[in-house]
Image (cartoon, rainbow, N blue to C red):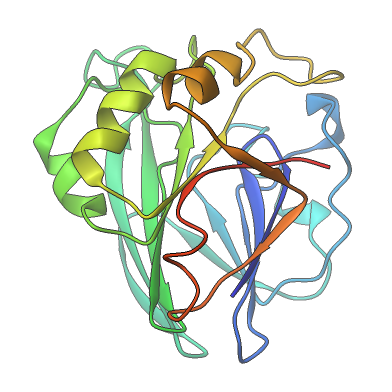
Length: 209
């Protein structure tokens, strides 16, 4: 499985069989690099402009939204609702986390979760191989809450998302506090993993050029 981070909450995932997935595509106003890829599957966690710009994706992808289960070209997908704030969605509504199963690996994308540590959320992601988790605060959980989730979930690989980098036009924090609090990380441009090598690549991975 190949994984790269476009920016914000958007990732490109390619399975060993060549099936491609893009999560939460954003539009150009976010200030992150332009998404310039074709995909077979696009997941949308919620309908905010920085997570639902499906028109930025090339090709004719299958669009996955909301709760449910899907099996698309051998990729198993499960969506579970969570809240975008810590007040039952009264401030920013709901969003959908996704679990992907492919190549014998489980990848969990935690969307724009804003809830404090919640056992139902932990149970959904528990034991996944790769956890993609927001760390920038304000609109999502912050670095401290993200660390609590990471400890409870126990993923082999943790990839932070939804944080500030130069050019991003959102008032969110950089990933530095999270990376420091997790006690070390590897910075790489892209990630290739399989069942055989994932233990050697375990830890926090900061996917940046």
